[in-house]
Length: 584
Image (cartoon, rainbow, N blue to C red; front, top):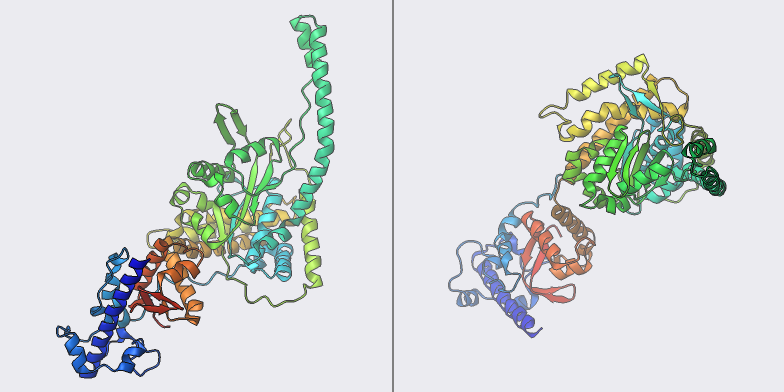
């Protein structure tokens, strides 16, 4: 501690001498560098008051510094730097004059505003439900719309596939991600949108208790009868086989009553689909549970991404393991909706492996402007209550409807194919060609080429979901639903262009931006000066150590937002390394 104090005192003395030289030069020549801030006598002057009170004469300045450098002087061109571990950043001072001479530069390109969610495209029932949730919860309408669309997708995906103009039948499954900061009421939206599904799960669990009791009794009786049949045949293979054939197959275990899970590994998902419902969803109001979970760890990420991509494509799930043996699961459907904070979402969006593997091209993103700060209390309208009841009844009617299964299987789907009407087909082809024309080098969709290649299919899937939600027995996708699917696909394309671009900025830039925001909105209320301890002890949560604070400060210096200042008091504590906030 004593070494720190002696070094700090030496720095302070050197800075005082530097200020004396600068003031003396100003008195002699009238030249004052903007890098030194306001001139003596002006408000917010940075020259220590006690030096001005004592008075600095020209003669004093020259006697102190006969080797005064030519040109306009600044404190930073004179004062020596510390030789401590912070010394590698002495170029900060050398850049002060340059940084002061031009306006600060933005750390990152300002992203465009969020694309408005086309809630009308959801149709009367889903659109009314989205507005009702918005009225009740006051969360951004985009999250509300995304939530009900994802819930509807989970509800209908087991009943039918959509037949594309190419002749291929594709699942109506969809993968959705909603990005919003803490406090945007994601969990409340999730509860509102999923209440019919949770109600159906509760009914399945209640039935499962009785079904399991019947199954266990039947299994015990079957095992005992099998044992008796084998003993009564007295070793006669033919009689044993005849007796066992007469006994029949073992009782079938009832399906696990789970429709949604929030953080499965891919192996866990496969096991659930083997013994549970054939149509499930990965739904998480805290998407970080899945994105940061074991299934997305470095060791498991590629396996999970490949598996999810396969199930989105409608391929049978296949696993070959030494302990588990061979598992083949055709006829399964999985929907996904993760709600994530911006930092968590950027982990996925900036992951090159997920981008190149193709999972991100199967995900539809929305990231609305925050609603926090605009949510003045109001009572929800009675209309919202009736809209949510109608929405819930529609979902429950579909959830309680039987799905087509393969012969002799209780959880292997054989969904029918629903083609596009002739008008819908023409709309789809026009949209396909519109997208294709913009995919080339320099095209507006080139930055999201992977997603853009699948946009026509996304549009058809969404159109089929809207059709089936309105009529689960529909025989074709109409033009109205196709137009709605295209409108929603265009929204997701606009959001992807905006969000994928922002996610490519480095984490250091994001931390520097967070620091700049904190400095300008919080710290400036008490001081125009800042030091490293102020930043990592009181600053943004993402910057909690000296190394991170140093990197963020260096970026702000390089972009002209901070300039070095003399050592001195900052917010009641003496600091030997200080920066002034430009524009403060």
